[in-house]
Length: 250
Image 1 (cartoon, rainbow, N blue to C red):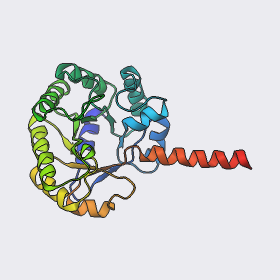
Image 2 (cartoon, helix red, strand yellow):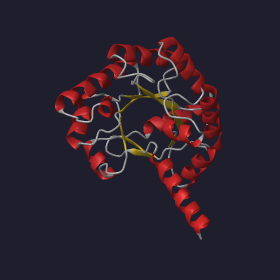
Image 3 (cartoon, rainbow, N blue to C red):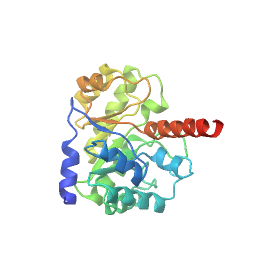
Image 4 (cartoon, helix red, strand yellow):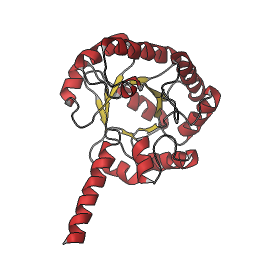
């Protein structure tokens, strides 16, 4: 399959009300396993990539390793692969855009791009984050799927109407800057989801976690993509620990 068809195939999976489920992977082996389970597309998670290779999360994985790992994942399957690229390993829009252009060269068809200040406090100002997204779009062309993430709900646990208004403002700005999708980790209330879906002209990505609403609930609210973040890796490591404990103590 050509790379162009992979880009189009991935974008077409984002259907409000019929969300694509991305069970996040971290290396070529996990990618093959999830592909064998019937996945329509794959996405890496920065946290499991870091955990699996001995680094903390938060762009502590060296960029050269991150790019090489992305290429290994892409080459291991015949599916579209999106890569969690955190903040693009740069604050400066031009440098971040150049880094994402390098990511595209690995064969990845898209990336997550977040607005929290890596290694610092809070979020990048909305206008500045929009400039960063616009620079990436200019660098990678129209086909690359930029899943623009806002961490407003991660930084503020109480999601009231005013905060959802801020989420919407960011989503609109990101859409105007050229984003392909809008990722809002920890959005859970169907009322909030419906409000965001109605106001922001981008497919909405939510993240599954223990205690999160069922897929059907999110689908009815208009979610177009459900990620699983670090939780598949955490569950597998717990299973490994339990199996090892049983073997060692037997």
